[in-house]
Length: 468
Length: 105
Ligand SMILES: [Zn+2]
Image (tube, rainbow over all chains, first blue to last red; front, side, top):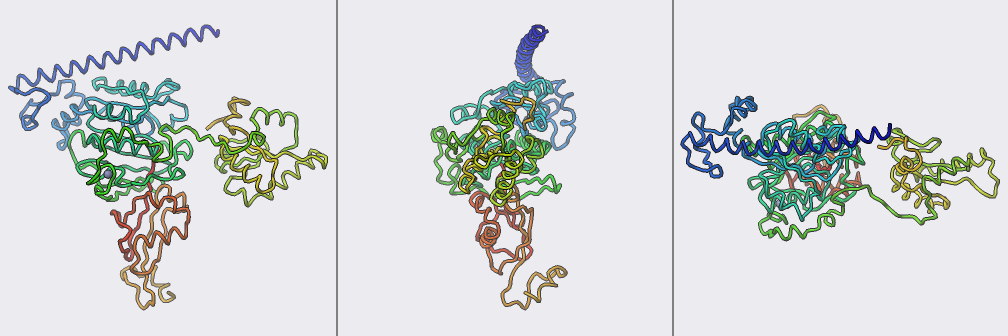
C-alpha cells in the first residue's frame, strides 16, 4: 500500500512538473503570437511606426488599435466602458506590473491583474503555501500546500488568462536583486507584510522612478495609497522614522480577518490598472483607511513630497549604489523575512524541553503549569490543568500562583522538604522566558520555562496538538 | 466649566464657549491601527485650552495613554481628513486622526 501511495505521489509530482512546463511554453508562444498580431494589425492601417514608438494620437480611427478578435471578445466589457474603452485596454495590454508578495494582498491583486489583461505580470515571493494561509490567500489551492507561492500564484493567473505573460521571481526581494527586477516593470505593487520591505520597495521605486501602489492590512483595518507618482510623496516622506519593532505587528502574531487584505488587494489592483491604462485619478497624495468593523472608508489627504526626504527630497542624492548598500534590516530593526523571534534570556537550568515536561507529567510529579498567553489564545487550545495568567497581568496575579503551588503540594502530599515545581509555557517560548525572568525576581526562584512553548509540544510530544 | 456642562451636548450651533475664564475647544480624536491597540479606543472627545496646537493635543493624549509615545515618531497626523503639522491650532469640533502605518499583508 505504502509503495503504491509513494508511486502515485511521484507520478503526480512529475505530471505537475511537466504541466507547469507546458503552461510556461503555452504562455511564451501566446506572447509571441500576440507580438506578431500587433505587428500585422498595425500594417494594414498604414501605420509606419514600430510597436515601441506608437504615438497614441494615431489610435483614434476605426480599427486603429491592436486588439485581436480574441482580445476584443475577452475584454469586451472593458471596451464597452466609455471611460475605459479601446484606448485604456490597449495601454493595459502594453503595460507590465510587478506584484511583490503573493499573500493576502497579492492574491486578489494578481488575479484581477491577470484577468484584466496587463501585458506582463511579475510575481515576487520566496515563501511556500501553508494551510494557515488559505483563509486569506485565495489565489492558492490546497493542492499547492508546501509548494512555492510564486508557482501556485502563477498557475492560478495562467488558468484565468493564458494570454498574459506571467513571470515568476521565486526569490526573496533584497537590495541586491530589487533594481534588476523592478526595472523590468512599469508599475510596482507592494503586497508585502513587513516594515523593512516597505522602505526598501519605496526607495527602489524612487531610485528608478516607478509608481508604487502600496497596500497593507492587519486585524480589521487596511491602508492604501499610491507613492512616488507624478511628484507625489514616497513612503519615507510620510514615515521618515521607522516604527518601533513593537509597533509593527504581523498577521502571524496579531491575526487578520481574511477578507480585509482581500479588499485592500482588490483596491491595489484597481489603482495599478488605473495607472497602467492611464485612466482616472490615482490615489496619490491621499490615503485610504478601511475600517472593517465600523464599515467605514475614510480618505485622508496626506502630505506632499517632503523637501527633506532622504530618498526623494530636494537635496536627496539617493543613488542606485546607495540603495544597494542600505541596510533595511538595521534601519527598521526587523528582518526582511520575518521568522518567529527566538529569545534566549535564561540559563539552561531554568529551562526544560517539552519532552522532559511530558515525562514529569507522566511521572505524576507535583507541579503547576502557568500559561502566559493572552486569554483569546488560551481559548484556542491549551494543555490540561494549565493556569492561564497572561503576561501583562502576571504581576497582579502572583498570589494565585502561590496558592496553586500550595494546593498542589497538599493534593500530592509533597513532604515539607521539597515543593511543587513551577513551569511556564507560551506559544513559542519567548513570553515564557520573560515571565520566568520576572518570577525569579519575585521569589519564585525555581520557575522554569518550557523551551519552544506549545509549538514544540506539538512538534516533539503530541503531533495531534493543534498549532495556529 | 460648570456653566458649560449642559450646553455641550445640546448646543451644536455655537462653536465658541462663552463666559469661561479659560476658554477651551472640544475636538474629536480618531485612533487607527496600533493607536487603537494602545488606547483600546477608536475615538474619544478631547477638551483642550483654546489656542492649543495639534502637538499640544498629542502631549495631552500621551499623558493619558503613555503607550502612545511608542508611535509618536511614526504616524500620519490628519486634521479634518487633511494632512496637518504639529503646530496647527485646533478649532472647536475638529477631528484629529492619529494614523500609524500598518505593515501587515
Ligand atoms: Zn520621499
